[in-house]
Image (cartoon, rainbow, N blue to C red; front, side, top):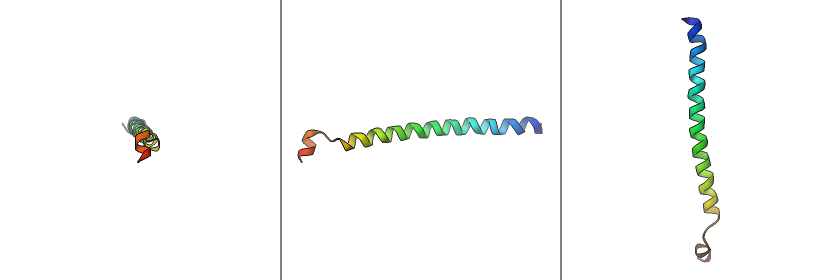
Length: 48
């Protein structure tokens, strides 16, 4: 039991961390896209 949990717990944690990091990466990409959109305003907005 000890030997199995010795390998199972870190493996489970690795999958959990990998999933969490993927979600964070997704949010970061969305933020970068919105930042690019805000850096380049529409021409009518620039005239204001």
